[in-house]
Image 1 (tube, one colour):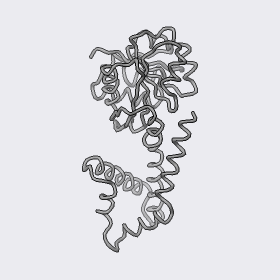
Image 2 (cartoon, one colour; image 1 turned 90 degrees about the vertical axis):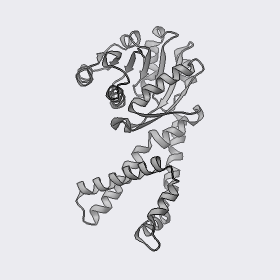
Image 3 (cartoon, one colour; image 1 turned 180 degrees about the vertical axis):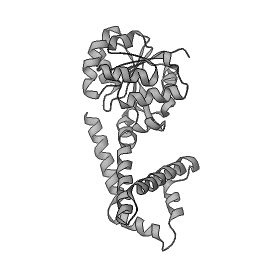
Image 4 (cartoon, one colour; image 1 turned 45 degrees about the vertical axis):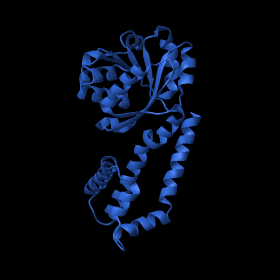
Length: 266
């Protein structure tokens, strides 16, 4: 499809998206334009991806069918105020900000605008991102499908009800940080038992990667997969016993509930 794509903001998430979209042939570099505040970022992104770059957000708007607002949430009001008069009925605005509802975004534009709200995560950097998606009533099913096609360029996209988007933040948007903490803790334990740190990180990260693939590819319940590893009277069930004793599950659940609550307050 001959759609043009614009990014207002060119941070790590935007670059991950652009990289995946180009690598997977979703769009050609000539179909993408991005803006950034600094000359160095504009030059770096242009050199890295070969796309058109600018410091002018309005130039992005004027040259895009779909516009990703890829700035930090605290800058949304400023950016929307700058571009809202130039947004047409046919353009689609895609938000990646946590906690910002489609109604909140629509109120800032002050007119009927096509808005898609998304919550991507940082595994997009390695084309394994998971993005939650919802829309307002101005976006057609075909337009949502096209946005999802683009989002699938750097991972997977799943359409959810908007009242679940804050849950997406805790289970997907923020959760890579929990996993990194878990990997770091496992590596620290291995180092404490004598393993070199670089090897400890490789073992721990590979175990998490393989375990995640088992859940996705076998479609088995995580509890069933856990039981497959736990031999009677063995080493694994002893480790599970200690994790349960220390409140592992409860800690994860409470952390995620706090994350969801914070997202709803943003």
